[in-house]
Image (cartoon, rainbow, N blue to C red; front, side):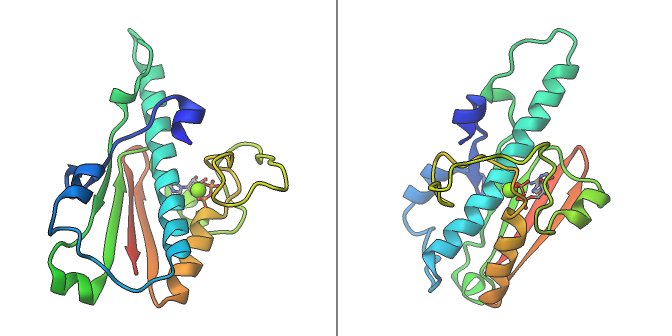
Length: 178
Ligand SMILES: Nc1ncnc2c1ncn2[C@@H]1O[C@H](COP(=O)(O)OP(=O)(O)O)[C@@H](O)[C@H]1O
Ligand SMILES: [Mg+2]
């Protein structure tokens, strides 16, 4: 989606390692547990889309402020950082994941509205055809204002939660308790 809309995308690191390398590391990714796959996918897709959008927008703002402005490319976007406990016992008890971005962040006013249905900082609601479903690649990256509230409802339904903290201009931390 980022490549489609911006022709660039942030890297995704898991415990400091590029995500595809992390997945290949034998022995580290044993965090198996029972969960409804589509809900897990929905939650992480929405949170990663938000983090990616904020990271790209921050890079765009900084590149526009830069005097000797060169064309913005993907290398100027800060990576998204996922932290997962690797200790099996800890994982079994907690199942907590952190997703941190160094994007635009949110002030307290936006933060307090961010879990409201229909709230989005995107100007102008996107329009899509009726036949486009949630996981369709043609979906817009943001704008409906449903990502955070629906993700939290799903997490809470399965006795988890989602917490967001942010500092404007510095980035956002999302804690996902599964
Ligand atoms: N990681 C983030 N960094 C900065 N702002 C965020 C982040 N996640 C959410 N937000 C803010 O919360 C709003 C609501 O998010 P969401 O419910 O996913 O709706 P949408 O992405 O469609 O706007 C976003 O429009 C944005 O202003
Ligand atoms: Mg969103």
